[in-house]
Amino acid sequence: MRQEDFFEQVWALVQEIPCGSVTTYGELAKMLGHPGHSRLVGRAMRYAPEGLPCHRVVNSAGRCAPHWPQQPQLLRAEEVPFLKSGRVDLTRCLWQGL
Image (cartoon, rainbow, N blue to C red):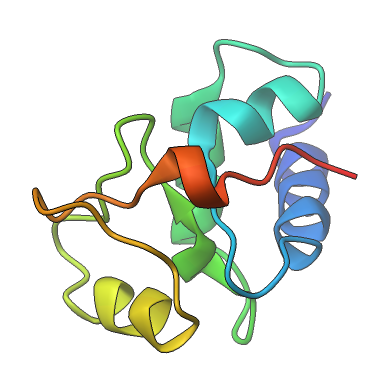
């Protein structure tokens, strides 16, 4: 599969994440039938088109992107629950696909 095609599939799936929910890079890779390609999902997020709810994708520990200080603010605005540690509470808001 071409990288561009993979990116398009990632973006289409990210568009489906409901407000107030998050998923992980690894979960997206699994949903697309490519477990183990979470870094490639991360690269797709880096090049995502404007308006895509990329803020709803976190790492497997529920941590937000370290160089994107607005991400936690955007998630809190959607009432995504956070733990005291500052990580997203994945047990309460993890979206695992349609």
